Amino acid sequence: MYTDTDTLEQELTFSRFDRMSEKYPNRSALVYLGEHVSYRRLRDLSERFAGALSSLGVAKGHRVMLYIPNCVQWVIAFLGIQKLGAVVVPVAPIYTSHEIIYMIKDAGAETVVCMDTNFCYVKEALAGTNLKRVVVTNLTDLLPTWKRVLGHLFDKIPTGKVDNDPQVHRFTRLLKHAPRTEVATIDPAEDLAYILYTGGTTGFPKGVPGNHMGMTSYVNDVTEDVAGKYLKEGEDAYIAINPLFHIMALGLFMAVGLNRGNTTLLMPFPQVDAIMESIQRFKVRWLLGVPALYRMILENDRQDRYDLSSLTYCYCGGDVLPEEVKERWQKRCNTPIYQVYGSTEVGHVAYSRIGVEPSPRAIGFPLKSRNCLIVDPVTLEPVEAGKSGELLVTSPYTLKSYYNKPEETQKTYVEIDGKRWCRMGDFVSALPTGELIYMERSADIIKHKAFRVSASEVEAALQDHPTVIGACVVGVPDPKVGERIKAIVVLKEDARGVGGTELIRWCRDRLAPYKVPSYIEFRDMLPKSKVGKLLRREVRDDEIRRITKSKPATVAKGA
Image (cartoon, rainbow, N blue to C red; front, side, top):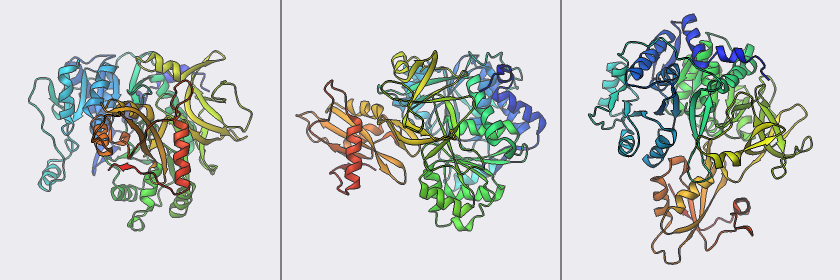
């Protein structure tokens, strides 16, 4: 565990980027859609963006929502916001207006950076929230004119209608502002760096506040201990496929990319051929993916046409990697897949060790800035060595609460021996070496395409429908996406003409696409305990038994 907090105070993630921009000014920091952005240019653009935001009234502590996918503008905005001492609120660009309006209000955001394609959702929020300004961009805004012209000519660039309004500002216009080189005075332990949103157990996403020190602590771990001597400063290439609004992708991007003077191939969408072509062309050595991505590459009909031999350090996060995928990857690329484990609440927690073959279902060894405890979920007493229990995690550098959610905080965080621990909802065991082995997860958490989906959040959306009186949402195992989301629904006795298609459409209007149920099944009642608690685990276990016996239920299937 770290004891030198002065190091963490002096080496904030964005200040390390500044140091790399001075050391490697002409090296490509990013490669995006074929265009190179040097460290010098990226720093200049981020400081111009910071200056523009400052002139618009954004100051230290203000919340700025990033509602855009992976692109150069995301990185520019992130760095610029951090230098102002403002708080980044990164959210999925596929969230609906229903979700966005809630998060803008909850975080207290007065500024949103969005795409022109999702401006229509932000527009709905202007009237009912405290939004003061909207910054709009397009995926191709920073590409050369000829590429943009060709893209529009062949209808390859999605665009959206944007209002001409004093509150609406174009990203490219803001980049013409004079750069702000002054960095805000930041207390790394007390000042927020970001607020990230994760699934809620009461029907709404929970905001997770993160301080600068908390992020720096695990970035240090990854850079110095996990990657360590294997990372070639100023020479390496990393490909960023996972969305940067996820803590796992953002952390690794900073650790092996911007904080070490290396080049990051930034992918706006997980298009497999483009990913493999980029790996081949730029001799990428570092990769972070989810199980579905590795499977997509292995099952691509054209994968033998690409030279992937440069890949050396491949990591998998978001879910446990199936053994058959791990073995096929080893055979195809002659390199293992290492595991990464963490959560929005506590950041990065565990990594496999380079050079050590990961054990089956392993999620890695705890990082030195994170303490792990395996306990009985009822008594919270530590389990015997080698036994399975719920994983608790703490760190002296992180904040330990949800934003404006005292009840949710009380459910997730517990006091043990004077320390505040986060209940991960995952059940693990530990080998004598200290390697953590995944056993199962809480029935409330569904892993769909590496997204953590709260069953309670989906249930709450369904129960908002006027004909639904009860809902139980569970994850059904699926080899391609981890788990598919299935909803068991009870309707009012007088409900007429309501089917699965209508309820799935209802969910699509209120939930991000990855949270929408794939299946709806109707029942007369749901299993509950004597005190009225929904027995979600019992329903999930029953679904697994039904799959095992190959007796599918009568369901309404969604797209």
